[in-house]
Amino acid sequence: MSHDLFSTPEHALFRDTVRKFVEEELRPRAREFDAMGRFDKALYRKMGDLGMLGLRYDPAYGGAGLDWSYTAVMYEELGRADNAGVTMGISVHTDMATPSLAEFGSEALKQQYLVPSIAGECVSAIAVTEPDAGSDVSAIQTRAVRQGDEWVINGSKIYITNAATADWLCLLAVTDPSAGYGGFSQIIVPTDVPGFRYELLDKIGNLGSDTGQLFFDDVRVPVSNTIGEIGRGFQQQMKQFQDERLVACVSTVAGSAQLWEETRRWAEQRRLFGKPLSKMQNTQFKMVELWTQITAARELVRACVAQRVAGTDATQLITMAKLFCGRVSRQVADECIQLHGGYGYMRESVAGRAFVDSRLVSIGGGSDETMMHYLAKMLGF
Ligand SMILES: Cc1cc2nc3c(=O)[nH]c(=O)nc-3n(C[C@H](O)[C@H](O)[C@H](O)COP(=O)(O)OP(=O)(O)OC[C@H]3O[C@@H](n4cnc5c(N)ncnc54)[C@H](O)[C@@H]3O)c2cc1C
Image (tube, rainbow, N blue to C red; front, side, top):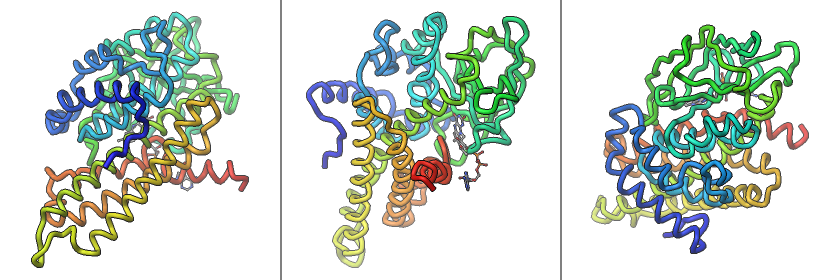
């Protein structure tokens, strides 16, 4: 059953490239990445060579200059890589840490960080969440104090994806505590600077990504490392979150559809009470209900991508999609693990892994409650 979002001949050509990469480089090593607790950094070079790391970015910096529909194609395919952690790590680099740099960064910053990021020569991370501030981004306390031409940074970030892999961070810091929402800045911090260190965290799922706590102890970077205007960091980060959320929706829906297919195959083979599990009405009802949910989620994502391609403000629809896709993926994983019976509870089972991995979608990149908080405001409550 086809569940591809876009299928023009151009999309199909690009889809084949990504699918080949997934089949050859990612799926065979999916469990190895879990055991490593991170992705193989060398593969970023390969993705760079295939043109996968700067799809929407300006060709002047090595990007492909394509519209959002190609990003959707790529993350549909990566969503089928059998490793949600790896997909998340890659998406942090392509669509969560680099969009602000591409849109607001100075020419010098783009040459220094965007060009090698698109080539796969370096990897990025997005550092927003702190031990005492997650959903409430405006409560972050990591401080960047200006001393001459340098920022001196102190503070800590937590649950940061690519913590060990990243060569540079897109850091959100407070640069003027008296300026409210105008007191934050996005600053590029290379991870080899004195005063920076990380500690890895032990997660229950998304094992193929390295997640850690970051520490900044009198870290010094040039003020020219500021992305865009000083004091516009909060607004730029809110914009950057839109790409982050939509990418998460695309790969999540693709992953749910794949799990559904796997579960169908399982139900057709598994026999009990003298017939295949798939012939029981309960199984059929559950499966059609889940497919309806997956289809609805996919159509919502398609509408979001269409708005992004058209250049209209997709914030409200993306916020709804993030809420809806997270819930659908949890429901699909829960029902599919049930249909797998005891095998579903085994670590090697796709359903078992999806059950743990999908739980993150309703937390990371803004939780369900955060989405509802924003939606309530947007809808005038
Ligand atoms: C595996 C993983 C990877 C991550 N990667 C990154 C990363 O790369 N970069 C990064 O910056 N962050 C990252 N995060 C952090 C993630 O974005 C935060 O965990 C998330 O935003 C929630 O923040 P919090 O953990 O502080 O929870 P809190 O904000 O403390 O939330 C606690 C509870 O309050 C609820 N809540 C929130 N708002 C409201 C409201 N208005 N009303 C009622 N209840 C509410 C929440 O939904 C939650 O249930 C990652 C997290 C995980 C687990």
